[in-house]
Image (tube, rainbow, N blue to C red; front, side, top):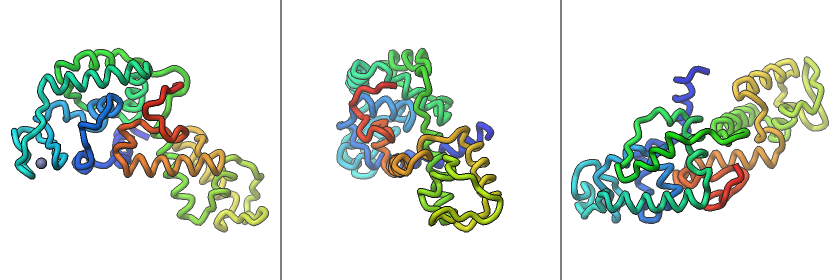
Length: 253
Ligand SMILES: [Zn+2]
């Protein structure tokens, strides 16, 4: 897969920012959300004029809200300084936060977009630039999405979740012809074709992801991906498939 393809793929995972901002109540944002907003989801926010607390509109140039003509909460130095205090608290609570968010941004190629970081937040920019990828195997959202897409495709073909997991776990020796193991018939697809489908899916993902190793893992991943796609706040919170409320908790990674 080329990098351009990957970028296109990443874009389909995320709703466009215009749709996201309607839901943002920036007053309630903690440092975790602000960091992801500035560095990944909406880097242009650092270049905006302010936001309207009544209708949640974020303004680029005007000094009043174009929708309700209400006064804006201005993104001035004092505002960004408060944001900085929130981010500092989040980093103190979770020392790997910036490293981890940067690894996610890299996975999505979001590390290539232009960042607009207010000057008072220069220290965040510096820490971001210096942050190295966490050791071990860092959380890889792309693999989760690919695994979920794969489950979706197999379900569409008529596979049960048990059949999907069995196929990827290679629990059964598949004959070349029609497959009938207990009550499973793998959507009536021959064993030869099933093996090819499995190999192609694994090649495109890179390895068999945890989401395809058991039915509960599969369900967890599907629920997580659905939530990530539909709820921008879940993304800004950095929720993980295996820790439903990772937000605010110290992470081990
Ligand atoms: Zn307004």
